[in-house]
Length: 204
Image (tube, rainbow, N blue to C red; front, side, top):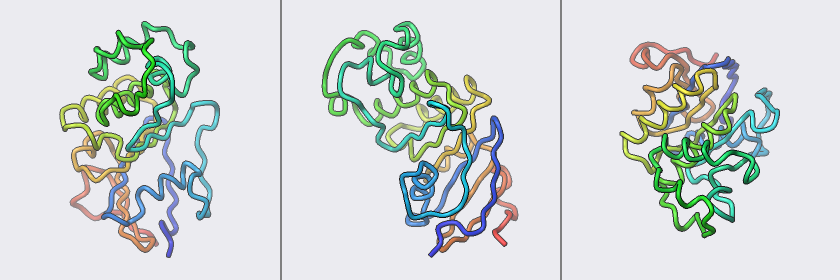
């Protein structure tokens, strides 16, 4: 059965979209399709395609081997970002203690907690400054306070970046303007976040 049937959606600079739906409705599969990680999809998707102009963040961010500098700098090459910029980004995502460990080599996927890894992923957004970001449950390991801080940072520092979030948390909605809800079987509704209680646009 179709994942999303007959959806034509355009997002311009600074637009924000939250994607919700019951478990199994296809939220993560949709994001994987957009990231070209799911081969069983048809349709057209256009997005900024120059180096690092589009970022996809999963629930468990990729943690490369090496020192912490490489972990925070990813997807940029280690050493390509000044340490003072790394320090500033870590401070903003409430990880100042990591600033003193940039040269430390460890298995950081095991050393860092899931919440710390997710905050480092947000630091990467601030450092990379992409034109579009797709986040799949990217704050699932954070409490509501840290979640608010991470999204507020991105919206304040990157106001022109397109932001698309897949989530089951209602608290994420306050950082977005548009709402795409998947109902399964290809059915969907689309509207504004503040109009969620009102009638939404439905697929033809």
